[in-house]
Image 1 (cartoon, one colour):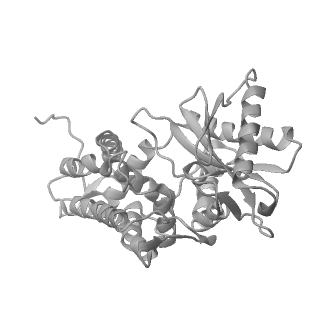
Image 2 (image 1 turned 180 degrees about the vertical axis):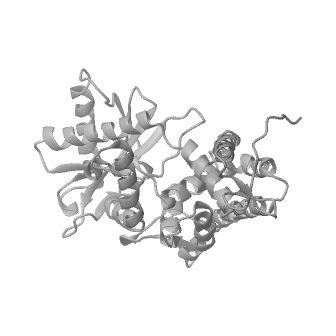
Image 3 (image 1 turned 180 degrees about the horizontal axis):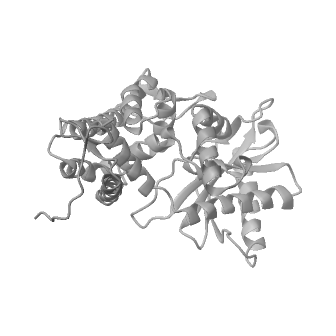
Length: 375
């Protein structure tokens, strides 16, 4: 069957997302740093039950490669297993800061990935490493009776706010559970390893690729310092809620994008994007009407761009000209080159066909090999 425009765009968008994957060595270092801090916090501290959990894009498999020279910004939450009534927000922050200072000193001469400096912020800390990676560490205490729900300090260290990054990650992976299983099985077969030995971060599903495509467009649509910049957590939550198991990346981006706004609720003058694992946590708590309008305009631009690309009839180069400024010219060019190579191989093997409508594919009239060179 010949390839429809949607299928071609799926291939190109997949190529864009693959090009924006964080380099494997960097991703392995990120997870090594998580493990290093977590092991130290859990084993070395004897004044309480501590744990550390990754959160955000690194845990969800939706990170995109930085091409602006900036560090990779990863997030974590450090939990001390005590009741919130027994400690103030400021005292909790102080304890976590002291523990992180001790970690940096203790690991100074150790081999392998490690953080080498800690800097305080309003309610969290930033760990810096010799690699282009830094990690924000947010203090937290558990909600009584819950395995995953947390209380975190507000920005003024006055009130407790609800949070549940672990529950959100579990929910997110549940939205694509079958695809994760299939991706791990395929990876294990290629690598000749057991499926159980394939970590989640080694594979990508259509939902994860969809979010990467949204981020690629978002990073060019908004200026880096734009206060109305669409946040990754709102993109991820609304995309996860809107996902219906689509297998085509183009279909997923278009269908998910069309449904995302329906999961943003208006609450008086404010907006609500609730954490599906903890509805009391609002990912849009800082939204204004201006920020909401910017989000809706951005997602509309994603769809308009892809609709224009789907409807172009002047060839792949025009498609690339439409996609390049929106999703990254270099990534689109690489995706186009890979697509062309695959079709050249198919043509040379006699598998590439052309329909009477002139669309390339693998059914129809065989395309002959040629040795001429056009201008």
